[in-house]
Image (tube, rainbow, N blue to C red; front, side, top):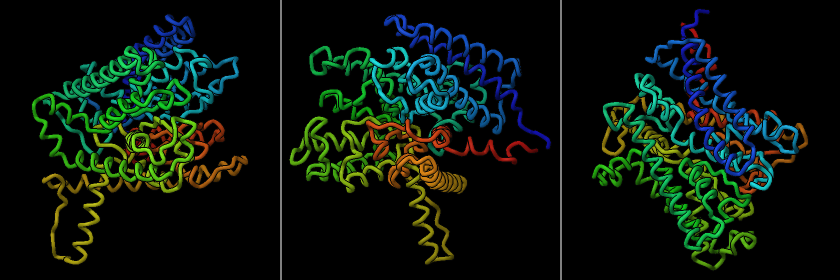
Length: 514
């Protein structure tokens, strides 16, 4: 077989990514020094990361930055896998010789991949800074922030050599069917996206810590404010608190809700707002659909909670039955969290009535917007799928008609339509396969799992959502799944974050042949 792909260049550039990843490890190292915990863990991890990055770079000391499409896809796919593997090292070292569940490689890799892909599923078991160090928990939070806007987007923003082929790389990594180029230079576009992302993160941290300073959020101290700022904007959902956002006051929950909605919005729209074009936001078809879906789902779920669909809430902040503010707050928080794949929780929706759980499951399938940090299929794809279905019905009645698909006044290219339909089909096939595999694999080892739990495990990992139903609820864990199921879920998180095709294509023979 004649190999066409220049894999050495892709792997060498991955080494460069890892060397820069070592710089981000300085954040938990500083936390480790402040709290005098796990200093050696992060010093060792930094040394390992730099060494591996340097060795990979030696495979091609002078790689051509003008990567072809195949090399670009390979570079993005293996970079995310490599970062996930490196991210597991602190968990392994910290858990070595202890009773921590993270001392096992599969568990450590699961937690790391869940973090970097902003999934938020956990095998940590007891989640607390009393059980794990402040530094390790901050690394857990930071991995989600790094993965939110995209590792490769960040590299393009700071490395001039990657900007040569930046458009192809961002298109491969970014969620959604198309790249919206904001400026003539793609590196400048990458910097704009990261600055908007960084700005919203700082704003949320300031608001959360401000609530603490004025006495409205006693336990939202600076560490918690930073930790939750790092995982809200990337729609990650990790929290150093065992009860997630339920551990904080109602006003904290109300502050976080709009930021989760923002995180699921196309970040390019905020650039237009900053440049005096706010009309571009309300004129955007996807944003209007996204905002409308959130409003409708909040209304439906709020009505169900008001009528008594959440009897288990007494243990976490009081009942919602017959009370307007708690019902509205719980509905807005859960829809804002799960439709955007954030995964934060203020109550155990796994104990809600079936009707409320169906609304939540429906929200999980919708997803956020293209160009956001949200997971799932994405609103724009559902719009295209529905319009294509409508066109097929029309042309069935009028075979001679030629009717293009229009979105926001523009004709959608047939190549884009084919890509959207292909992605949606692959997504559904993977979802069904994973559900069946998880059910059979759990039965093989005698692990009791309902059909709904298997469905939620599948959609929660491939959609980068995190929590599911039953044992996998917002306060549950994936710890007890067999290792083979965990490995599958690690794969699902990886392919789900990179929108499936850039990863799956690497496993095809046609990708490597001339």
